[in-house]
Every structure is written in structure tokens, then in C-alpha cells.
Length: 395
Image (cartoon, rainbow, N blue to C red):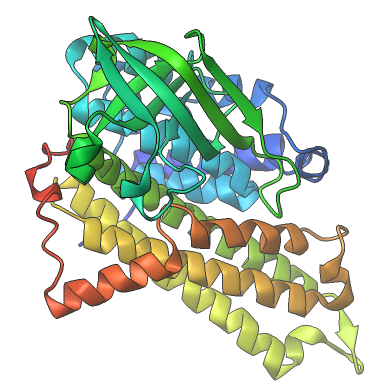
């Protein structure tokens, strides 16, 4: 595999890096403290084509490949996890799922304005009693004439108060368990929809996260994504893309930790020498560099498989698991290198540590991915449901 960047990818990296340095870095400490970023950022992301970076041009996107999406996510998370999360949810979980599973009518109605950044998309799977155990969903959708009537609740939903459209998963036939889950496109303006932000989060404070409530929402049957009972397959295919973006973002967080630690190690002195001269500090910095390089390779390997249209659940799972663990360790070491100052808001590493924990949990916990990898090695993971998925779009 050749991971040499094309000229287009080099330009994307440079543009994304400049955007992060100019539009995120100067303000992120304030936004993190206030619990939200300036909504004007959305238009700036859209104007640069970032919100539809790997969506085909015919559907309003930039028509780039999966590793271009990875480059964008790495650069945005170097600024703050909240911005990579926004792209992960809007592009990775929502837009890419509409591209794979939507009808032409659905794509033109929902995907095109989202890829252009005129509308924002989100993803509603997790519930108070259903996270890793998807079959524990309680949200229901009952057919009534030309509509489905949705009732239920979702939680820990990114962009809950920001998004215009949501991919929502609900039971249409609970007796069938996984085979009875269906997916729907829900609009914020539909009567019976409401949302509420979660306050007091440990990390990713600049990002909007919260709950969704559905009270007798009438969703047109035309908004059913795929067929009845295909919701579980759709959700898992969406997570293959979402996990890829989370892994790519974790690479950016490792790099942010590395850059901050190297800068500090070159100026801070103890016992008459720069701390970069102490071998235990060097060891932590070396671990960050190793984690950064290994994580990038895992991400680009998964991205290359996606570009070729090859099934990549195993590779994406491994990249997500390892990159997020490396990022969490890098952030912990970055605080240690900064000593007491790392425990304050004077330096960004405390924010990095807070932000690094959530990705270890969402879109498949560390434990879920550990089990997945073991089952693959032991030959016990057939993924029978997912083997019937529609082919992914190949750039």
C-alpha cells in the first residue's frame, strides 16, 4: 500500500491546518470553558468543502477519498475533539450512511444540502439503557397509514441541539430482536420532537451533546432508510465509517500532545537542564511518537480498504481501539511532562486529557473492540448480518 499524499491531499492538509490554527486555536480555551463554540464555524467549514469532503460531487460534496476524510479529522482534532466530532457525526455517521443506503429521492432531499453544509445531520442510536447492547433499544416506530409514529428517547447524541436531520433507530417489530430494528430520517421541525443538552461533561465541553425525545412523531414512510428490519445492518455500517473518523481524530490528538510536550520540554528546566534531557521524559515523548506513527498506519490501512470497497470492519475496529488508547495514554503523559502546570488551564494538555477519554468509550468501547479482535483471531466472528450489506461507495 502506498500512503503517499496526492497533491489534492497535501492541499487539504495545509488548508485544514491553517483553518485550525486561525479559527480554532485562538478561541478554544474560551469555548471549552463556556460549553459551546461559535456557530459561525459551521459556515466556514462548509465554505471549505469540509462537511462533504468524501461525498461525490453529484450529491454536493468534494468527491475526495476516505483517507482525505482521515486527514481532515486529524487536523481538526489537533485543535479540539469537538470539531472532529462534528465532522464525524455529520459526515461519517449521517452523510456516508445516506450515501450508502438512501434512495435517490432521499439523497437529493437530505444528503445534498448536508454535503453542502446548508443543513446539519446527526445520528440517534444510543439510549439510556442501550449502548453496546443495541438490542436493548426501547424506541418504537409503528406504521400508521403513510406514516410511522415514533416514541422514545435517545441520549449522548452529538449535535442534539444543532442538527437539522437525525438518523434514528427504532423497533418496528421487537419480537424479531436485531432483525426488527429500522432506521428513519427525522427532521427537527417534526411535531413531537425535542432535545436537551447534557451539562457538566468531563470533556469535549465545546461540543453539543444531549438527549432527543420523540412523542408521537409522525414520520413519513418515505423517510424509512433501507427496508424495515435493516436498521441494525445500517447502524453497523454507519459505525464502520464513524469509528474510522474517531480513529483518525485520535491521531490528531496524539500529535497535539506530542507538539505541546516537545515545546515544553525544550524550555522547562529542572536540576539545571532542560527536562527534554531527562530520560524518563524522553521515554514518554518516544511513546507518543510511536503511538502517533502506528495509529496513522492503522487508520490509512483501513482507509485504503474503504477506498477499494473492501470489507474493513476488523481493520477499522483495530484502528479505533488502538488509536484511542494511544491518545488517552499520550494525553496522560503530556500532563505528567507539564507537571503541576499540566493540571491547570494555562496549558492545553489538561483539556487534551479530558477530551481523550470519551473516544475510548463511544462508538464501541475499548472492551467491545477487544472482544471483536479476539473473535476475529479465533475465527468466531462471522458477521453474518453485515455480510448482506450493500456495497459501500468507492471514490
